[in-house]
Image 1: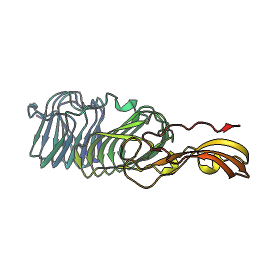
Image 2: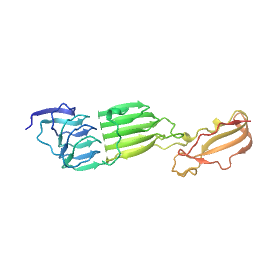
Image 3: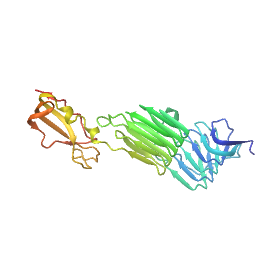
Image 4: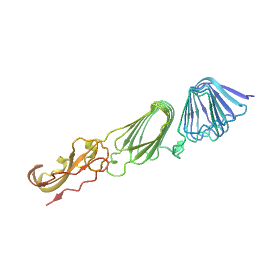
Length: 316
């Protein structure tokens, strides 16, 4: 017998104050965050389920104690949001993050289930990310992340700049727009890796050219990870005009764009920015070589994967 019935209008969040078992009837979307349900979860007549938590089909839930109903929009179960079993009924989309449910999960009548429970999910708690955004249609900017980005809900717009370390990006829900940019040092040195975990639909990640992307998990549909190509200018460390002195004899090293090709002749990798490493021994006047003693005839080719720092110009 139900002891408490609560009518709500709009969004509802389980915070751990409700006496379990808790039943939520008729929400639009449901977001089960990491560590939210300390018990079983039963889904009845929901449409789509997106999950990083295994659906075992063994959830056995006794009579409901707290029933939540009304003109509901979205339902959120935050970390430690349910100290016991939960029933979700007549929802549209349900998103269950890794570690979202400690017990068993049953989904009866689901139209479709998208799952990836074997992926290596990051060990971070939601509060440990640099950027943590939950809810509806929020915007935020962040510089120099150390751990990463965690999004739950829908329609968030997040821009993260100056990424110079490996980070994780965990995206739950739908229609998020995430822009990620490196600090420009990734071509020479260790390229930061962005490990991406997608759980949902219609999400877009725009990843800058100085970053390496690893899509670890993507149970859902119409998610897009767009990687920006590396420009030749970004690979060139010293241009011709920068290398040539105003006056005197010098040995100089500089880089020029190489002939367009998809494969780097130097390392054999598929590449966006291929350069030729040039060498010249000349006498310069007002920045122009007026007498050339020696110069590259077949300069080595490099790209964003194998480019190495040039040597400083040598004086005579």
